[in-house]
Image (cartoon, rainbow, N blue to C red; front, side, top):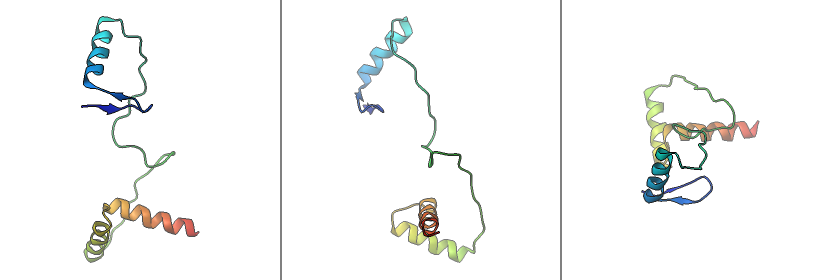
Length: 88
């Protein structure tokens, strides 16, 4: 499976195999970067979870509207909050 590096370069399985071979035999001249695990961050600053309770009927409506827009519940709520915060 080919992957696209941050620089835009396409790296093939064969290229990975060659790099791995050189790394294992000590001849690799590359540089290890920061390993980022998980989903990309939503912001350039610390993020925290926000939790609150709603009646199930409102959750059903919210989920239906999110689905109609092709969004998850979280994406839908983030968009609504962002729109309201821009108004402030």
